[in-house]
Structure formats: structure tokens, C-alpha cells
Length: 289
Image (cartoon, rainbow, N blue to C red; front, side, top):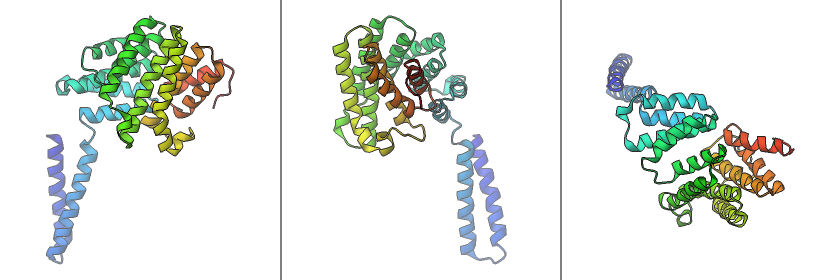
């Protein structure tokens, strides 16, 4: 209602201004042109004023903040949406719970993160994102790797259905889906390595890297691992390499792990994934940055 009222006020004001400016010559074509331009200006101002005010807009804006590593600001946005529960669809609520849980995990607030992720798990998780995040949380907290493996494998299976087959097309969407699925396989590799199943872990690493190959071949900045701005693709790729690095480190393949941590640090210069990778490099005595 507020957006509609604002638009009506702008249209009437700009219409009056347009007629006033064009009226001196009483040229009907000039008046028509001025009115159209006034209407377009009103619509543009309305979009700026109201375009991101709904739950979807706030969620998108908060997700961008999280991508930039501004987790405290992202948390505020997510909680703002939660305060208006009546406007949330079940799908949006599930997305919000997972997003908030992941953000809290990146702030090392693990207990709070678990509460939101487990609440989201009771809802629909068609792509396995929630189960994957819970598996990460268990591993980061030093929990039971067997439970983490169950969740990681469920995430892999859900990804096969929810994300589709990246080989079925050659567009950006298919390539990005392949990178997301690669992250699920890399997570599985990490947990398998913690359980001492090194051969199975290496197979998962190999498959994860095979899945990201189309994306690496499609985007030059990603090929060189020099990504000037944080993007969804760069963050997903960073997650793949960070988890592969953790799996290789658990298997005592230190040199290979270093290379994956280096790549992850370059791909995610602002977020937690990159920070974890750079911390690993520093601990291993490797140059950072």
C-alpha cells in the first residue's frame, strides 16, 4: 500500500510538472513526451524506494552481505525477515533458516547455528543444502564423523535429484549446479578421510574436481584463480577446494592440501572459507596471499 501511494503521488506531481513545462507552447506531442518521461521517472523512483523491501529482497541483500564476509550485517537482515513471520512461505522460511544457520556457523556460533539448521532439516531440503551444512558443523565442532558422513551422503543423493545433471546442458546454470554438487562430493571426501577411508576419499575428490571442470573452462578469471570480486561461483569453488584440502590434510598429503588451500584463499578473499584456508596455510608454514 505504501509503495502504491508513493507511486501515485509521484505520478501526479511529475505529471503536473510535465504539463507545466510543456504547456507554454501547447504542443500535444511535447506534452505527451513529457508525460511519458515523467511516468518512467516515477516508476524508477518507486523501484528504488520499494524494490528490496519485501522478504525476498531482504533475503537477497542479506545473502550478498554474507558473500562479502559481512556476517553480522547479514544476520541482522535475516532476523528482520524472521520478525515478520506471517509473510514467509514455507520455502522462504526454510531458505532463511539455512542461510541464518550458515552465517552463524561462519561466526563460530556453533550452538545457535545447529538450532536453526536442525529446524530447517524438519522442513523440505530438496537440494541437500541443509544436510550438507549440518555435516560441516559436526566436523568443525569435532563431532561424530559417522553422523557427518550420513548427512554428507544424503546431501550428495539429494543433489543428484534437486540440482539435476550438469552434463545435460552447457549453460551457466548447469555449470553452477555442477560446482554445487562438487562441493557436496568434496565434503563427503573430507568426512571419509577423517574415518580413515582414504581410497574412497580420493575417489570423491577426483569426482568433485571432474564436476568443476566445465566451470573452470568457461570463465577465465576462475581458470587463473584470480577473482577480483566475490561471486556465488567463486565461493562455491572455494568451498570445493577448502574441503578437498581438509580431506588431503587428514590423509597426510600435505603438499596437495596446500595447493587446494591456496586456491580457496584466492577464490574467497573476504569470507570464512578463505580465512580457514589461509589459517591452514599459515599453520603449515606456507606463504599466504
